[in-house]
Length: 271
Image 1 (cartoon, rainbow, N blue to C red):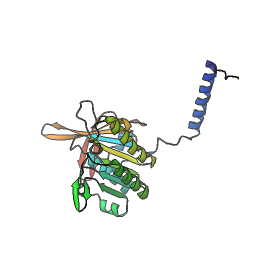
Image 2 (image 1 turned 90 degrees about the vertical axis):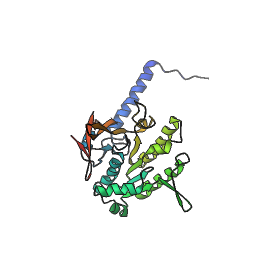
Image 3 (image 1 turned 135 degrees about the vertical axis):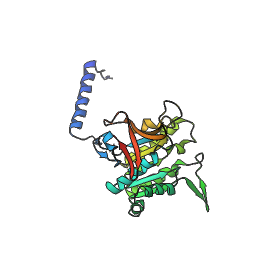
Image 4 (image 1 turned 30 degrees about the vertical axis):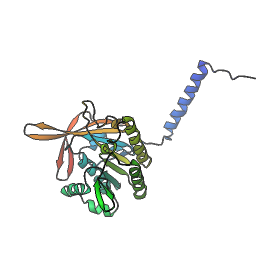
């Protein structure tokens, strides 16, 4: 019975070199499926300039920050600008702030959300209340079933052609899980489904209590393509808001913080 000869070091090295050349030719021939230069502009004044023109299409991003920093307004404007200026239908799933509050925010900025609803360019899903019979109960995060969320998301994304998604805040979903490994796995499942459907998504969370945690559970940032942090600081007798691109894969970005202002027509990053 003959045995295969074990390849020597030179043979292995030649094989590695051959495979490297094949990979190089695939890149040169543009057979790589994802074009990292394709962007999704947020439409938020002054922000896209920080990240070379916009978010990378089809990826997931984290917006983290303290209460009152402007996370929900940033996320809602991202969807509004996408639907009204770029023709990209958006889906906003809220777990904490009510739909009425979001609609009121839109009116305050002069955004015609109602028209976008009618044209099916924008969809709001309110998970803050769960209907049981004829009663509406507050969402109980300890008993919330993620399967219902998966089905709702995927159905809406496919049937309405959704291209922009916001989940606000994702931390509410995972209070029932003490194991951060489980949280990371579940977030990855949601993110993978959205990526498969070419959605550019924003997951909203809070800044963690630990000094080095920029997110609630300390794992959210690992699955995201980028992390944007919003915060405010007291300066004399007023409160000033700031924005910082903490992480952004696949693109150069501005390093450092910028002032953020909430104006009559939305958010503006000040230079």
